[in-house]
Length: 78
Length: 437
Image (cartoon, rainbow over the protein chains, first blue to last red):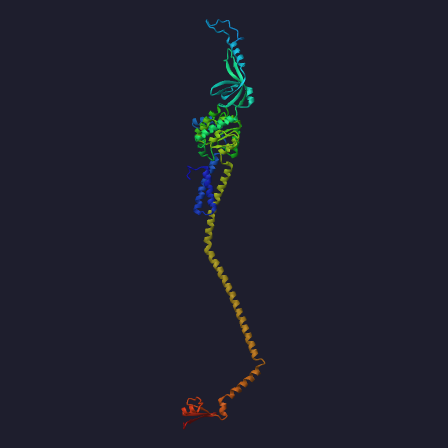
């Protein structure tokens, strides 16, 4: 799974797969460390995705957002 | 006009056969009186152009394929009915013709004065709805939205709803329940009347044109099927079907099924559920799960290294332990060997003792009381032996003839064959010779 086509669901699914493999005890040292590294990266991605929708509800009216986009950005109107 | 308006003093058209001229206001008043004499009846047709401009009356047209009639109704009477009139809605109205004669400052108008009104029946609407549903289905418009990928954690959500409706609060409640606190873009639009469908469609198109918007909720509270009819608008449904963003609809209650529900990606029974469907992941729970995942990965990483480090340490101690183990084993064997040797010596002494005892007993037996008996027996055997001793026989006067070799000759013939003989007496031998054969 490349970082480009990664989604929250696919990341969570892969982390769960990794943990199942580690729980099985069948992974050798090299594979374990590789899986842990990949898992940590995915967990960081998931945490960032969750952070992005946890920063506080921002409410905009459509016309405000359109005006903001047309003016080239600016601070969001709460 | 038998009792008509009185002619004005103004001179009429020369040569005209028509009566008058009458003052127009008098004529208009007469016309109203006559129109009001028309029989009051019920009419059936479709509503178009309903308007309620804040005055005392509301206005709309009633149409069918063959004609139309302007209608008006006292506002308070209309509001008491508790219905809303959207374009195309089939209604039955009761009333009669009326005419507003106007004035110097106001235009006259004719209308059918409605005193009773009812929706022509949901059965009719349902037939119309079913016909449209089949058409949309035949055009394959129920599928495109279902094929869109809905993000698990949309950062920006668009919502089309009435500005003052309860649906707005319900959407917020649903998002709060999910723990979602991203960006929400409200596109307020009328959700009931003939203006609703085009405004909702326009709002959807505008939301979809904003790249940030990942999913759109269309929400409206409950109402009669006529109230919800704007959400069965064909143009609106076609717009929804072809949007690039998934649309989650929640129109009316769970018993209502509007056409927008059919074309949307997901149809929910309440705005709260629609909000939850827009954010499939429970953010609070997902955060907890992510923490658990992080801890488990950490534990696995730590355990993988520590376990192997312990194994290596154990392996490095193995040779020394091996030697120590074998030394212990050797000591054990040595102890066992010594113990065994002690046991053997003891057993040997025991056996020797037994043999000694047996010998002693044999010796004792030898010295026991049967010794005289054995001696007598021996003497008897000696006597018997002496009786058979040839020497004894010789002592009694017998002689033994032997050949040269000293073997006894026991017959005359053997004596003759030997020729030279030895005669043995008890006290010595005498040579002899056979002289006569």
